[in-house]
Amino acid sequence: MNTIYRKRKHLYLTALLVLIVITSGVGAWYYINNYQNKSKVTASQPGKSNADTTVVKEAPKSDPVIHIAAMGDMLAHDTIIANAKTSDSYDFTKYFTNIKSAYKDANVVFCNQEGLSAGDQYGISGYPSFNAPTKFSADLQSGAGCNVINLANNHMGDKGVNATNTTIDNWAALKPLAVSGANKSVADQEKVSFAEVNGIKIGFVSFADFNNNKSTPDYSINIYHDDALLRRLITQARAGADVVIVSMHWGVEDSSMVSTDQINMANELSLLGVDVIIGTGPHVLQKVQTITRNDGGKTIVWYSLGNMLSSQLNIPELIGGIATFDITKSTDNKITITNLAFTPTYMHYEWTTTQAANNDLLARKNAMIYLLSAAAEPLSRSLFNTTVAEQKQYVVDVLGSEVTVK
Image 1 (cartoon, rainbow, N blue to C red):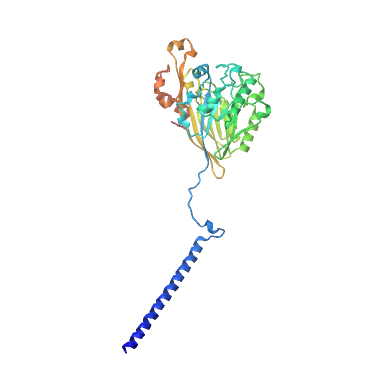
Image 2: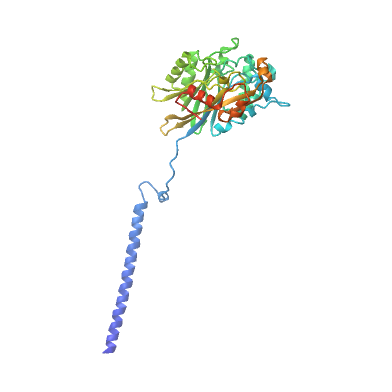
């Protein structure tokens, strides 16, 4: 009896063990098969291969942007040339040592070279007939970072058409982003200067109010009173660029008030679709204005950036600065201009009261540009009897509320 019982018990246990193994195998098979099917459903999407199934979250791409800096008149007065003289050449780069930090992130640096840089062949001279050494242009590029250059100003014809052409050739050899305003032929005058920066295409055009030298050819300097020329060039720039920047050498010298001519021209340029107007010529600062265009865009007008490098005699002529702003292009190709700011500068030189009384201009020494915020000490060595605070308030009052003064 016990033997039979033991045999039956053994059979029951064996059967139970077999049942457990089978059940476990079926369960495992079901789980694996079901899990894989679910994985396939989750990972596979219409139109995508298995290589596309990995999900990686990328940071959203930002819209392309250009950081722009713009400075006013670069005037190679006799004092500026004399203070730049070295034993065997010239060094104009030193003038910008103290200010480059204010625009170190700029992709585009606009400068107005007011006057020729045709070199010794045409006679080195300052006011009233400007011609700097050829190194002046090279040093504006390497020292100040100038890479968008205006040559449309009233002094560009001072030494005649050959000197103008030499200056054009000097800048062409330096290969900046864009140069405009002076031309070697009628065909050259019809060409707009384009440059692409960070995926944004710039059309750059320059005009002056007049040319001191009436004997030079009409094509030599772009004059904005030639309305047909102005419209042709800006229409061409507008058709070929994302953003249009126009340099205007205009206004009344030594006046911080914007003239009727400037206002009329700014409105005309706005109607033609210009995005930014950079004004030079008055040698002092003027206001900043935003004009809303019919196409929904905006035209930013810097009526005058004053002087940057010069040795003029009055404190308003020696307070200039660096205009900065950003140009952004959205995915739908819309252009926006933001972050308008201005960093004031002070153009310093030292002169005694006796030297000033005798009008001994070449006695001026230690010429240097400073950020106004750091100019307390050099201002104290000048004859102007003013302070950093007074001059900063002057800048704020003139430029107006549309720009942040740093």
